Image: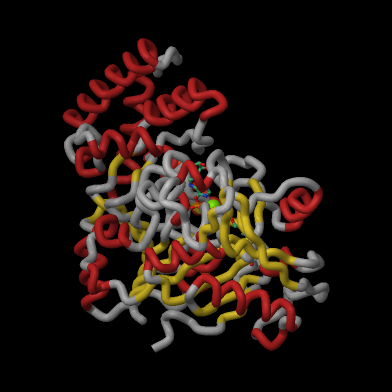
Length: 430
Ligand code: GDP
Ligand code: IMO
Ligand code: MG
């Protein structure tokens, strides 16, 4: 395949960053096409840890990185991210990083609105990252958002920014009972970021289309996961974008026939940050130990992640919805020493059994999981580089996951480092 999309199968944090970094070695261009800095993609290269929020995870492989039109971009946070990489010897020039003119801006008032709304929801809060993702996408859809293109004319941009900020302040004060923002300071801050980011602006859709036309390999890096998808996830406990492969077309500006395949990324178990249904969630000592072993604390917000068993019903849903040609199963190493292991293979509600995701997402919050039990293993798997290096029970566990998910196993993660993986089938192999 020449063009591959990487998509999260669960509720995000599946290890997409690590897999994208690994696959980027064989790609020419890496493109983010949705979401914003609610994403946090962790890369561990030569023992050094990097967390990328908006910059695609091809940056450490020296590949061209594209911020597509479907993203929402916080200009202040992006400048910080670019500077952070530069301080660590990874400067990105406009030849390395290309930002779409059409991407919408996340402005300081979006974050303030997001946080104020969450505070007012109390126990019913979504548990957002508080970075203004929902309010920024709202403005985009309401056709009042500001885009990078609007930065071209400084005075007109400053004027619209100021007008929007005053309107949002009225909302913050009058309706949400939150503190308004200082408009002059806000405008100055954003104008400073504007000056820094303008050299990176580009017609990214044309750039990506031309790259594909020229036979270059393009990797599309999804953020979040299918269960956080605005349409197909556990609404309203979702993020505000489509997180599946369909978003590649709208969010990067490429045609459906130009995407050769979709690789799903899933943990060998499951996690979720924030509120919402999680049928295979576990609690108690085992959850605590998996959280510690797997370092399951949100990379974006530091919140402890909720922990559960692998849910094959949801995985099958994600695979079918996205036509995933294969799975990369990460964090197998974290399950070492847990015996027996469970896989959720269906749900029950009263006398009704579900083998598929119930249409009602409210019901999903109430169902009881049906488990299949498999034997675990105790040998350290972190040094495995071939399937044959794994204990037989680990291989059986992986084979069962692939079988139940309805796709094939292409990669396995056995540690956080770039090298800690088993590549059974490289999607970029001809
Ligand atoms: P993403 O948002 O999907 O890119 O995932 P995150 O980076 O937010 O969270 C995944 C976490 O698991 C990060 O801390 C990674 O360094 C780590 N990780 C990824 N793959 C593996 C793996 O196979 N084993 C272990 N132990 N850690 C992994
Ligand atoms: P990556 O790309 C995990 C979750 C938030 C919250 C819900 C809505 O790193 O996998 P938002 O701020 O998007 O409005 O929050 O979505 N969420 C994620 N959880 N990983 C992510 O991204 C997430 N992006 C959003 O925790 O529950
Ligand atoms: Mg993450």
